[in-house]
Length: 571
Image (cartoon, rainbow, N blue to C red; front, side):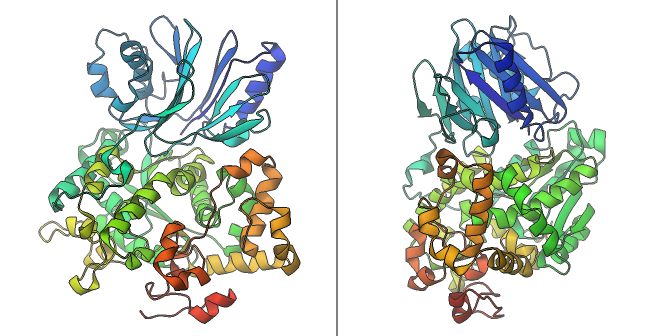
């Protein structure tokens, strides 16, 4: 991942303002510690903090067209850049960077080229011939991007809120799958897949088609000129990523540089569910496995730094971001700059345990659509910013555009959780990789029950966070929360504690509005809470809040009092 900051239409062109933009860009240097770049043209500045993954020697940014009239600053990876170059043979490329194609595609197609890009990206492009500009964000919002407006009428774009929040009067999260055009004015959606309208699909379930689509998604993400690995929790999603990557590693270009043995990484409290499961998967696949542990106190000590980096006060995101943040630091210390991760499968296939209560396939499908549309506010934000805090890039194969189209086109009846037919959550994904002749994973791993990352690292992690918050926030503080925080009022002491930290770093109204709110149980949307009347009394984002579903569910009486205990059987 890289960090971009662009300021366009600025009134002050002085050296003081240039120095200020450089200073703000430095706030993103953790995302791109390898090089810094700045382009200034009249009243426009485009800056870049680079994490060199592809073409480390010559791919510094900003990037240009042949005569430097088109300038672009990009955060992301364009996986189909070689195919696109073949269609741009009349153009002269100056680097081997995957992102340089953007400048030349603009020359060929104007603003209507973004859908040609296969990858994760946020970019700002300046056409110096008329001082017009565009900005765009990838389909799902894997890479972060914010847009803001200065008091002098300038327009700002930044990879993280901290680079523009002090200097903009108003700012917000840039919508995924959208493009901003200074010529046409405002945002418009460039990503318009069939599933976006939430109509119930009817395509048949073909296991091999689903499998091949995912394998293709993983293989294209092996594009790298630096050491890499896979984040392996031992759950289904990350284990499938590791299995497919390991299977195709020997044939990849990366293997020529870094060897054919895949590196895998896991973190957890001592004795946590994830550590044991990940170790077993790593042994089965023959990876070079790196296992890290942390204590509850170490996680608590990192909370302020985590919230500063991930820029949210959402409880679930902070719970899961903290161990990922700690692990990323360890990974970077090993010289690794890129990792594959398993985000997105639960949203696409209805893998969260609350989907057990979906009343019918229509509501099941609509909820998956809602979850995918909101990924940029939750898991994508967590995966990107937790790793980028230490200059590590996370790639997510499940959020490949082609794979999503295949998976979201399947009749959702196949995704429904049907114990009477032996179908647990994400059964169609598990079944697609259940190959008796050439197994991808051990059976019990392939059919392991869903653990949210914040649960899987060790149940005492969440319990420890709640205990810590109880010591920081008094009953009277929580009782008056609606007066102190009238917008998105925290309803728990844990939420109140995180909000207090967030407000210290980001005190403006637009900042708090970038964080979603509303009731949730086990990571559901507010709409899905209506599926079970009991859930409204147990609004906790942990998977263990799915009463009657998780094998370690909170007892209802304990959950109601806010003191969870473990119930080891299905209800």
